[in-house]
Image (cartoon, helix red, strand yellow):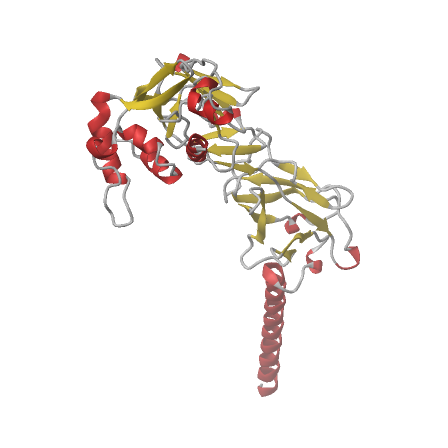
Length: 419
C-alpha cells in the first residue's frame, strides 16, 4: 500500500520515478502461506527513454511564418538528479533513489529554501537526520512538495540533442532519450516558450510545459507503481501539462434595404473591407482572400465566410444597387471581438458620417439587427443625421434667400411711394 500511495502522489504531480519501496519478496510473502517458496524476480531499468503523452502532438512543436509552418520540435534541458540503486535478492528485487553526489548540496539548498513547514521552517534538514534527499522527497507522499521541488530544483540542465526528441503525431506523444537510466529534471527551454500555430481557420497558442521530475522505466518486478517511464498529460490532475488557447476566426453580416415604400431587400450592393480609416488598403483575411461581398436577393451582405481576427475594420459600399443614388453609399466601422467561447464575432457596426447619415439602423445588443438603407434620391433621406441636416440647411438657405428678395422688393416699393 505504501508504494502504491507514494506513486499515486507522484503521478498527480506530473512526476514519475521510483523511490524506496517494499521488496517484491515481502509483498509475495504477504500474499502466500507461511513457508511458501518464493519465485525469484529481476528488478531492472528497461530503457533510457521517457515518454510524454498529450492531447495534441502540435503542443510538442515550434512554428514559424507567423505560425503557419512547422519549424522544429521543442527544446529541453535535462539533468539527472538521482540514480536507481537496485537490489535483487533470492526472492525478489527492490529499488531506491540515490541523489547524484556532485549535485547533492545544490538540491538540499533548493529543498531547504522551497519546501517549508507552515511555520516557515525547512522540512528537509540534513542527510544525517533524513537520509538521501531525493529518496526522502519520494517518500513524503505529498504531491505539492514534489511539484514545489520540480518548479525550483536548484540545478541547471544541459540541452538535450534535437535527435533525442521525437514526436509521434499518431500517438500524440513525445519521446525523450536520456544518456542513462535514472531520475531527471526536465525543463522546457523553448524560446519563446509560448508558441502559436495558425491554421487560417483558427489560432492555437501553446503555453509550454512546466518542469517535470521524471524517471526512466523499470520492470514490474521492482514493485513500483507507474514505473513505465510515461507521463500522461491527458489526465486532468497533472500540472506539468501545457496550457493552450484556441481562437476561431469568424466574420459578420448585415442587410441592405430601401426606404419607405421601397423598404425591400436590395440585391447587387458591393462592399469592400479596408484595413485603414482612409480606405486605401483592401483587407485580406487569414486565408489571403480580399474581403469583399455583394448583397444577394435577400439583401444579406455576408462576410461570415471570411476568417477575421479581433480588431477594427473599415467598410465601404463600392457599388450601390442599380437605380439607387450613389450619395447614399455606406462608409462604416466594424469592430470584431473574441467571445467567451473563443470565437471571433461581430461587436458593433457604426456609421462613419459626422454627424451620422441616419441610413444605418441596428444595435450591438442584437447583432442580427444591423440594416443599411439605400435611397433613390436625396428627397428620401431621413430628416435626421448628416443628410437630413443638409436638406434642412438647403431649405434654410432658400428661405433666407426668399426673405431677402421680399425685403429688397419692399424697400424698392417704399422708395417709389416716397418719390
